[in-house]
Length: 433
Image 1 (cartoon, rainbow, N blue to C red):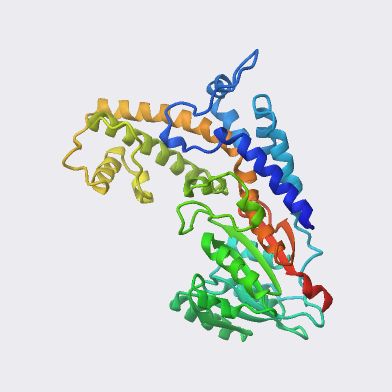
Image 2: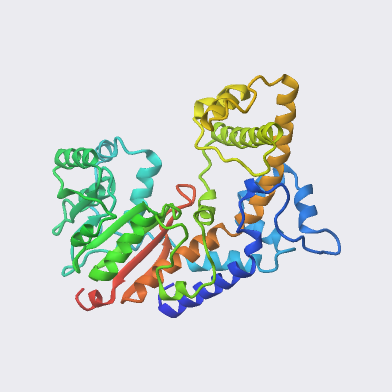
């Protein structure tokens, strides 16, 4: 999307589709014991009947293929295909031609040494992200600010890639943890790079001073309020350009999402932090073992909730915090012991559970899992559209103050589902370079 009308039109279309189909996505599966939407009526078979009869293999196949899921659900949700097509058309594919200036041949053994200490998937994300930056022309700024830098891996890569050029990038990495700044400085010094660190809180108003009309700012997977604050500062300071890959939309201080653009503020949608987690349900497949652990965790959570309902006569779902992974490779009884103590229920819940009761709780838990997976399947249709609604709100907020904005997928989804990049450049800069 390259001009305001297109962005606005796309936002309004998505907003209407999401609003009309709210009952299919705006719910919390763990809190429901039956499908939460009114059943559709079809001469042959209703949606609820089709979901109930769906095999686990077919369900998994639909989970992994969004286009097939939209096609299948369109039998009962007429706008499913429109949602899927709009999500695809909105994002331009990563184009390797739109990349950094031609790079000198880099010694591959040196590149491997440079990448040491950076997880492989993260390293590939950084490489793909860097390829999307507009080349710096002769009169263009070469000053880069790395927002929420951590150890400055991305900034270090940018400095390294242009080190031998006539106008190498000058990278400033902003990070609030002093120890990460120190480690990043050590790595930059080791490679003799033009990179410095600033120990500052990105959420503070003081951080705005580091954004100027000459600054090109990058943020790879800055969470929630952190990238929203960057956009706020960039609007106020008329930054040269921004390259943002948003992440963790739910990590905000407000209880509900506050739209950033004037267009977004006109929407009637109210999004809770739980709603903002829906786009994050899509994860990179972590192998068979990781998948098994996820399945075990969901089963045990549901089985434990069944236990609480049995012993405490509670009707509402009782959430648990993050479960230590080592517990998931042990026995269900050990998990129950941990959960009871975590919820401070040792005086109310009997830990001495018979084998017969354990089997019953696990069986009922499996029935809950069966239902939850089918609720989530329908919800999955709306993951990308909801994420794009959030991204478009950010893009429009920038366009409203004079930025030219493009949306693209900077890397393959297999590297990360959070592969959307907002590329924004202030209109005034087109007259100078």
